[in-house]
Image 1 (cartoon, rainbow, N blue to C red):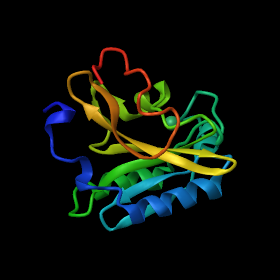
Image 2 (image 1 turned 120 degrees about the vertical axis):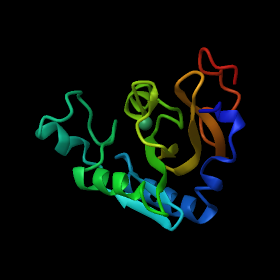
Image 3 (image 1 turned 180 degrees about the horizontal axis):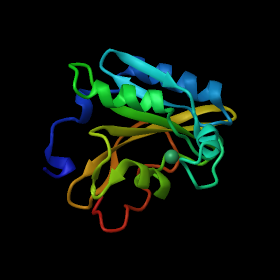
Length: 172
Ligand SMILES: [Zn+2]
C-alpha cells in the first residue's frame, strides 16, 4: 500500500459534480437526520439510514439516532460488498453531518477502519448540512502510514475550513 498522497486521484474524480448535486439534495431532504449512500461511476445510490433499526436488532450497541449517526441496512451492505467484484464498484460512501461540519469523527474512523485497514476499499464523503442548506463536503481517503482516513478533497465551503488543525500525527 502507498501513502494516500502518492496514489492517483482517489476514485478517479468521483463524486462528479452531478453526483454531488444528487447527494446534496438527499442531505437537505433527510435533514435533520443523516443521509447516507454510495457512489459508483454509474451514479448515486441513496440508502436508508437504518441506525435506529439496528439498535432494535442488537447489532449496534452505541446510543445513536438518525440525527447523530448512520448505518446501512444489511441488504445495502450486501449490495456494497457485491459491487466490489464488478466493473462498477462502489468508490465512495457518503453520509451527511447535520449542523456539525464535515469532519471525520472518531465514530466514522471506527466504522471505516478495521484492524488498521479500510473496512471497504472506498473513500468517504461527509456533507456539511444545516437548516439553510449544504455548505459543502469533504472527501476522506485512507492514509496507509497513519492508518486513518484523512481529508483529501474539499467541495464548496464546509465547516470547519480547510486550514483547521491537521489530525494529530498527520502532517496535513
Ligand atoms: Zn460521520
